[in-house]
Length: 150
Image 1: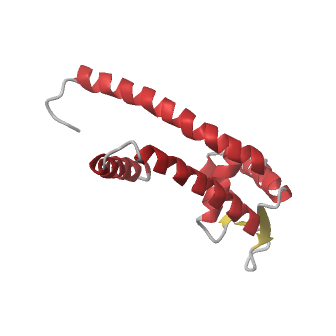
Image 2: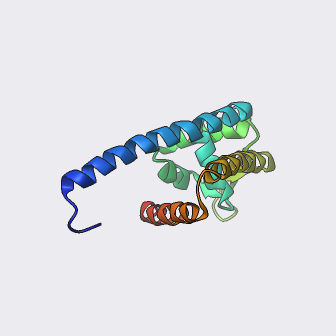
């Protein structure tokens, strides 16, 4: 954090950024919401599909932990995704009690379609920025994302 900046200045900038984040979220989520409604999935279901798309499989307890839910709530999410054909459950060969959840081809296609829509939206926004601003935006978001991942 910058040293020498008054706490009140930092607070004012943080307030502006909070308003900007809210506007950006609304803008991106409205487009995301339209795409999700076509696939008949909720935001939590989409977020879970995103996690599944990055892994070979996840166990029910891993899903609960990543989603910040109980295992019962995670089971409900997986049930709905399985009913839609976006995920499938299998038993681990070494321990039949262990349930593994994998994304299906149609689930992966949905995640990819939504990601492409998001990329198209970002490309449109980047068109309003200079090349230098585009690079700065990316560098700032990469730095913030690395903090979020810790």
